[in-house]
Image (cartoon, rainbow, N blue to C red; front, side, top):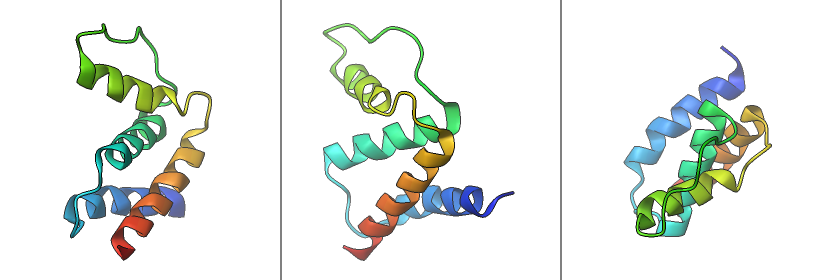
Length: 86
């Protein structure tokens, strides 16, 4: 396992134990980075207009379309580290 992979897995655990809940936009960014890191570029159609939550999650993930999983892991680790300092 690479060092980045280990850091990412630890950050995924640490995010569940943050002392302060991140705002919705930060949560969506975390979601998008996590999905890009673990599943790669999003596929499929954007959810319909009435599925607000599904659309927000889709858009958060699609924002990182084309970025490598390694890049997404690094950005996820950085964001979780910043949130731990708050």
